[in-house]
Amino acid sequence: QVQLQESGPGLVKPSGTLSLTCAVSGGSISSSNWWSWVRQPPGMGLEWIGEIFHGGSTNYNPSLKSRVTISVDRPNNQFSLKLNSVTAADTAVYYCAKIAVAGTFLDCWGPGTLVTVSS
Amino acid sequence: EIVLTQSPGTLSLSPGERATLSCRASQSVTSRSLAWYQQKPGQAPRLLIYGVSSRATGIPDRFSGSESGTDFTLTISRLEPEDFAVYYCQQYDGSRTFGQGTKVEIK
Image (cartoon, rainbow over all chains, first blue to last red; front, top):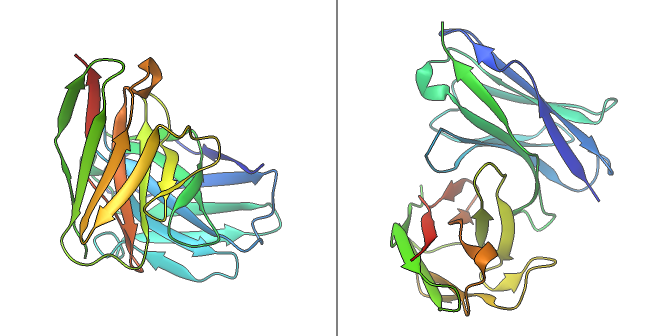
């Protein structure tokens, strides 16, 4: 069974770049799945950030597209998120997730990691 | 972008009662691409329902999903203590959006 684990700095300075990695275990990132990032500001709802296929194809939330890059690292079985020009509004718990083969839903989630944007 | 509006914001019920949660889409949702998730405090969301009405692995049959046009419903037939949580709907039409969530709390 696939398991996901997010990692990265818990504190990022305003105007800096948020960088997170999602390690995939129990399965190959090169399987027939897309891989996604979702975030949740404290006390608020879920916001889809974007997703990637192992071949490198990506799909981003239009509202974040100008600041987001998602990439895949097949040798290390992981994928990554970079969000630049961050502000306090980017403070959130960031989740990585596996998208089911059907493509329409997220069937496996990491535990999440809190990233705070503050000086 | 398809906007999903969930109602009510909070549902106060007692264990054993029936819960009915609504998710209304701003336009037609791509064929059966509506899912529901449950989230408990401090935990990641968990997939409950996909394809409008199919239960995910391990989800008890007291959870069911249905649709009527652009209105989608999650029903919990008899609330168990572990069902008190926040529930989100999500759609996919090439871009993903989530509803704002419904909190089911103990009355």
